[in-house]
Image (cartoon, rainbow, N blue to C red; front, side):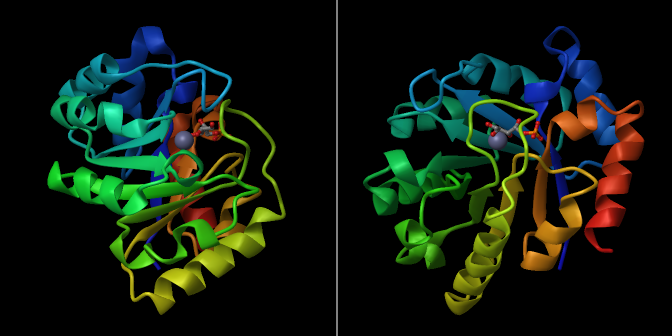
Length: 219
Ligand code: DX5
Ligand code: ZN
């Protein structure tokens, strides 16, 4: 199974965003994870299209935009125009997943759906064959540096089985509390894409940390 490491710029130094992104790129990151929060779906606020566009200008890596927002469709056009490579919406606030996924694809982006720790996979089961990415949250979204929720490991394995059953080539991403201690368990359960914010950006050497996470994932 492939391993993709996706540093989350939520934990970067926003005053030195370009430097931090260049560091991730030098460290071999596969994807840059961009956490958009609206203060409504989650109790925190981050940024929108302007920052996505600024990030797009300083890297050639794919931008994986995680939309922790209500009514995500309001932002699809702007984020696609700003240079998002993929947009991931939350199943809990997306009552028309079929239509919303189709629209993301129409805009030329990879379509992802995220489920919170307490949200059953049944929310996405019927549409699994249409997904480019399934994000299994391993913390309650809203903040970086939270503790990994162990009970999500079984769900990662069930998500892998669900995607295989649907003959889906979707990336299976995990997000929240991914670090040296948790990455291998997630990989063994079937995840292939690993978001890491706190682990990468608090490391003495973020480049080495990205490499270490990649190595440890397959141990
Ligand atoms: C949580 C965000 C995550 C977060 C990653 O709401 O979606 O992407 O930045 O968390 P840590 O810091 O645990 O890697
Ligand atoms: Zn995220």
